[in-house]
Length: 93
Image (cartoon, rainbow, N blue to C red; front, side, top):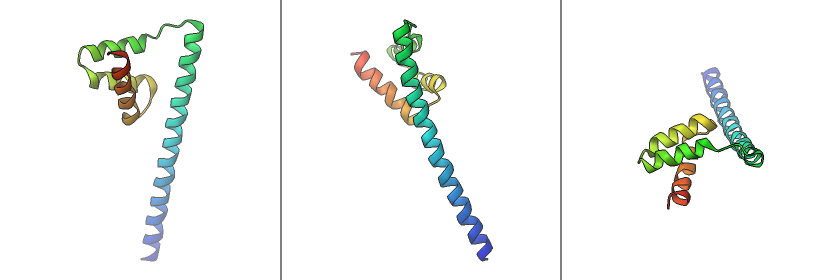
């Protein structure tokens, strides 16, 4: 019985560790995307993704905009929704 408990606790610890690593990876991706966007602006690369997202929002397709942003950035649902909400509030008023 003690063996099963020990295995269970090890499994829980492993899951917590994995979740922490995923969170760190998401933070890294977010930071990298910010830097890439800054570099792209400096060298004059057009931001077609933001234009696409704005277009989707104007068409009332907020969920599609969130999905597209997740595809492009690799961010999670919460982060993507926050970005799209912010974009909607600041850019479309």
